[in-house]
Amino acid sequence: MKKNLFVWIVAGSLVLASCGGNSSRASKKIDVTMTDFQFQPNTFTVPAGEEITLNASNTGGVVHSFVIMKQGQTAGTEFNEQDKPNVFWQVEILPGGSADTTFTAPDEPGEYEIVCHIPGHVQAGMVGKLNVVSGK
Figure 1: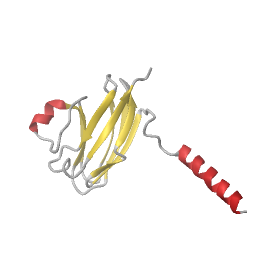
Figure 2 (figure 1 turned 30 degrees about the vertical axis):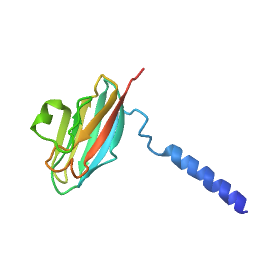
Figure 3 (figure 1 turned 90 degrees about the vertical axis):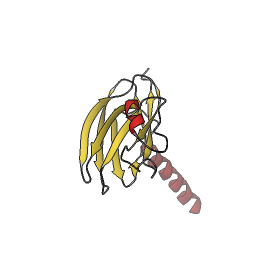
């Protein structure tokens, strides 16, 4: 009886794991929640050059932004004026607000940093990663 229960638990776990989100699978849709001070989830994979739908909500108590830096660029430990020319795309959302918008993913596959540009938020850990993969 214990052996059968163990088999069912393992099988059920595998089924549930296969149904869960796979951040390594490219998607044309990003669902993200911004809190104080993180992106949930914080890693996204999208196909290069495709139109991406971003559904973002800010459940935090302050303004947050979803900023995609250009490839090879990073905000470091603080987003400042010098970082503005290195922004690929961004949206800002008020506390309790949401945004349903689109952007075109970068054409160049690679890893792109995501940050919140509000002062102090990068230092607080509000960073993420956008993986852009070739559609071929």
